[in-house]
Length: 298
Image (cartoon, rainbow, N blue to C red; front, top):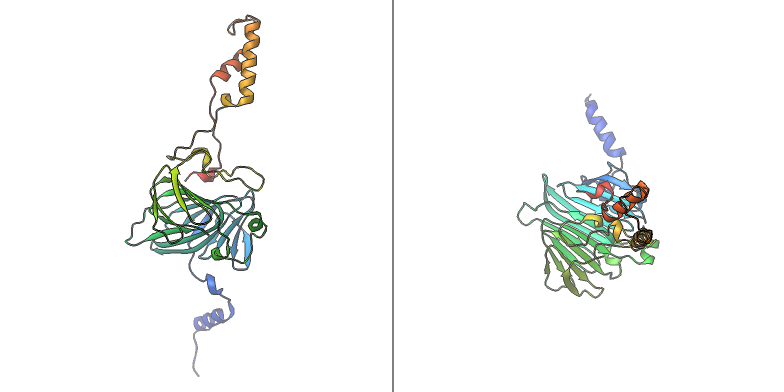
């Protein structure tokens, strides 16, 4: 009688009874380190709520609602921040050890900010594709915005790929490094720090200095998405207005000074309440406070 080792029997049992998904048997390519609000990982026909610590695989899609945010650290240490009302597909992410060989990320719509580690291997590549543009990245920090249509947002979990998406304008804001922007089969144009590339629906590419509002994308409620706009390094966005610059507060400040003049009162005299003196001094010496989600900082 032939004796079969127990471990061999167990191995055969596991191989024949544990189901393996055809498209997702590969190793993970990254991990979610922050998830907020309405955000999901879609894998084929299945989806689950995005959570901190969750592993992502090739071909996974990240879908966010009007207040959703997701931060992913990829296997090579590069970071991807996905804003509200977005759908981003992690089509390909090949590594050799901890070094990136090639990456292809499809932005169906929405907004994402990328911090890509320096590409150290020869012929390594990192590309972001939209319905109108291909961005060839060279170790850099940049923002990509593809404003969605209401029809897409209403069918956010539809079973479609980038090829099914209608032509949508693409906006790329570069803060560090270099990006080659190509569209419609034309020769790529080099985008340098402090500049924005605009690709319209017919594939025309134009590049300009980054200006006010370039890094903003309004959500379905008309509110500005806030991935990094409060402090985007090196691309010349104006600072947020200080308290004293607000039109309504300017009016109150002027009215307060007028009342003091009419009363012929010196703010330093004891006849003026100390609270009033402090208020006037604070209006003249405001402090700018910037508040942003903690996961925005790389």
